[in-house]
Image (cartoon, rainbow, N blue to C red):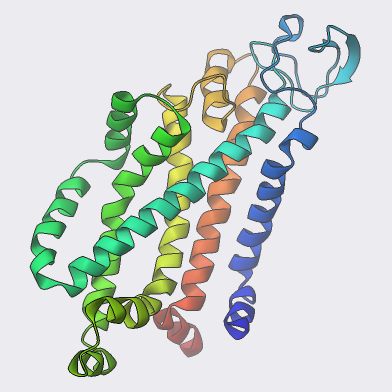
Length: 294
């Protein structure tokens, strides 16, 4: 395990993605400390202030004191810096939860479809039907039907990802089940569940980890799109999508309201995708062979 970890960390893309995501994770965890004020507090006197401005800020205690605005304020007088810090929590939570849920269910369904032929036909036709619907449209429909909440958004984004994970795991299982050690396990009467858990699943982990990073990046982006369209989390919850949605109205006069959350969103998705590419290059034997030939 340590040898694999050392080999993975030698990859520059993995190091870059891991460092950026570690910083973002620290921001999310320490948001109450890093955030200068309550992200929901409204100071109507200081609406659409520019970054770097020093204003007389009135806090929840009705005390007014000079304060420097790191990222300015939005059209409601809320501190953009604090809202961006807290927005990291929502984006990372959605990305990780969607990746875990879709990988867990997709892996289970993929194992069953790939190893049990009698289940394969019916199950994969259902997956094909789900993939025929664009993921963003399916997510919008689910959020509209169930109402906007963090749990709903996670489920709505995870459901369209499950068929993609299922197809990946199924393709891996179809290859692995033809290996001699699987035939040997079957010949000695090893139960199916034990073959799947002890032989098939461990040999599918590396591609699933890589797929999980792509699902995470896609989930973060889709959550921002849903919030931007007003179909995600309520506007009182600071998310990067909500911040940009409110900023589009005053973009010409206060573009900073959109630039800062947009930059954080772009760097987060970039870091997750770069991490996934690095893991793929390191863990996939085919890419390892290509690198050796070069």
